[in-house]
Amino acid sequence: MPVVIVENDTSQWEDETGAVYHFPKRYQTWLAQGAEVIYYKGRIKDKTFDSERLSSGPHYFGKARIGKVYPDPKSDKGDLFALVEDFTPFEAAVPSKIDGVYLETIPASRVKNYWRDGVRPIAQSVYDAILSHAKLLPSKLETVVRSSEDDPLVFESANEGSKSSYFGTRYERRKDLRVKAIAIHGLNCKACGFDFEQAYGEHAKGLIHVHHVLPISDFGGEKAVNPETDLVTLCANCHAVVHRKRDKTLSIDELKGMLRGRWVIPS
Image (cartoon, rainbow, N blue to C red):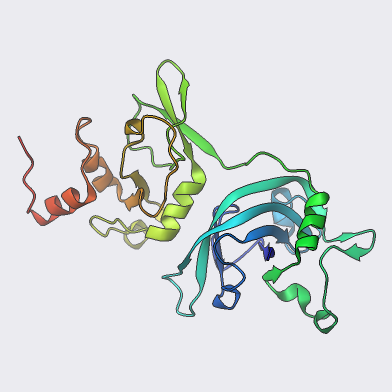
């Protein structure tokens, strides 16, 4: 069954559209892996967000699919978060009401509180009706690139291995994978445990490097990246040590061994 997911302008969660979506456990049944979803925003409450929205009124603005779902380690209420796959934005807002009629079917018993739900299951016919009013755009996931000769510590993550010629080889990276990796692995270093915000305060909130377990340059072509198994969060120091020698990228276990003083660097 398709689902409408609400994205608020302000939220207790710092989700990124099309990458990660947090939700209370009462919605777990509806937001199972593979569920098709439509993104929705309610009426604007703070005009400072006007430039970030397609409309100030209630509207739908994109479609996606729910990926793997995880328990939120920061929650003591059983909240969860889902990785979001295949996000496709709409060119223009699709209003919640067309010609005076809501696109969603509102049960008679829910007229007064239907719109309070952050996650709403909808019939396939409603899902199709919303999409019939939408013009889909290419994915807006931000991509950054780096040359194979550039500093290896650039810490934006990527859907890896798509090559293009630019006075050498450069490897395309997708921003959403960084967001997903952080949601899964957290903001502390998985080698030494360092936490930037804990050490430096609010100014360093959200700062962490995301490391590819297998270097992009070793892919030999385009490769789908699993943020749970192929990426890991590291502090700047540990990330620098991992890439200290271009002909030897350390594994995380080797790095941990060095920190414990039990790993001998081969000559």
